Length: 157
Picture 1: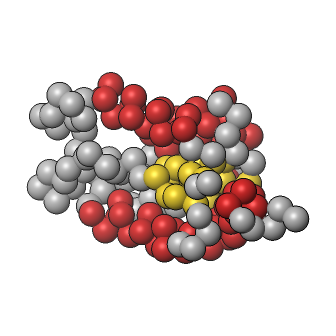
Picture 2 (picture 1 turned 90 degrees about the vertical axis):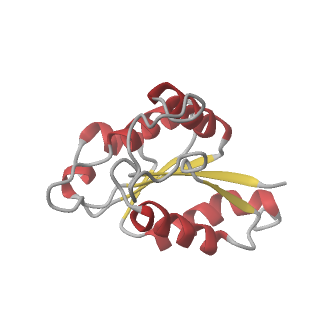
């Protein structure tokens, strides 16, 4: 039986590498453990090399469609990994990721927060939404495999 982990993190304004590279790395680290990484990037095209808000697609590009798909994924995944590194100068933290953390918490889904941003790490509400607050994606994968791996033929006996 496969288990699912939702990969929440910045998308808006990101280029392909910024949005995909860390998700691909986590997916690769989860390989062989029976755990499926779910990316919110499916159905979302790059426009001029960046992910932009409200692109001209009534099926997947409106704010409501994006939110509906992401809520669906958080609800149907066993766990959420929220990646909120310190944003580059001139950029802001990902508000959408913060919403996804809150949805997961309200749905009683475990949340792993990975951050090197002291503003995120020390924020009382974000901190309370996370079951784990870690410093690296490798640590997060270790927790994901430790918790969900037992359900996929791992350490449950």
